[in-house]
Amino acid sequence: MQPRSEAEGFIRRHRFVILFGTLAAFYVVATIVHQWREWLHPSFPPVIEGVSFLALLLGVVVSISQGCGGRLVALLLGLLAAALLWLAGVVVISDASVVVRHLFVAAFLGYVIWVMLRAIFDSRRVTFNTVCASLCVYLLLGHIWALAYCVVDVLDPADFLCTVEGGKSPSWRGVGQGDTGVLYFSFATLTTLGYGDFVPTSPVSRMLVSAEAITGQLYLAVLVARLVGMHIVYSTGQEEPRGHEPRDEERTRALASREPATNTAAKPRPPAH
Image (tube, rainbow, N blue to C red; front, side):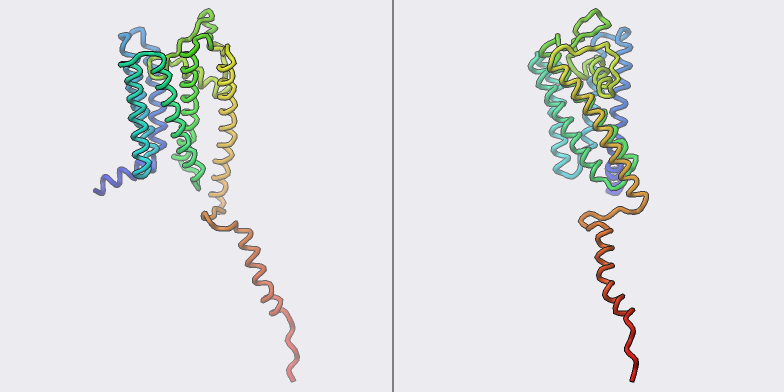
């Protein structure tokens, strides 16, 4: 029982480090597979990227599994996302199934981001695990917008155009199907890089692109301010336990309570007769 408890404690302390490693591995594998897809069998890239995406979902489930209730919710959502990934990609191949899968996975990742943001803002000190959590949130934001772009592209393929291919539609069917173009466009927008090789052409796609660029900048500004504030408070030893009043008010009240005693002690004594 002790080795198991030690392993669970290690995973709990480094859960966001594990998730960040899983995210980085997924993006590296997807990029390599897409680069070498000409030398591979046509069915290999979607399978390899699908398996790596399932590993990513597993890492997400492990990172947000805290307590029996949280572990059960995370496991159910992860299983539903994996089932939809398999059904929409193998059993029922239709636009409706693809849209439902993308929307559910995006909602699941949104729940994951909410859990991780709570962990970041509830933390009282900056650790490597906290930094990895903030990086994971940033990467998952790009992933959610990539899924949103896939939904828009499925509903109307003319919403995005690729300028380097003669103005053709990029045909983004989804994340985890052997194509990294939508992830590239999402992160280029999130970081406000904008090379211009993919262009939104409809009001909906332009609104999504603008919202992602604004979200990326606001997230970095708020997050950096939070992490710097946490580090300053912890390094200067001014951290207060929750539920306590600020230290300045306690010091003022203590000085006020000692003031009558000080005045009494300073008052001269009457001469003795």
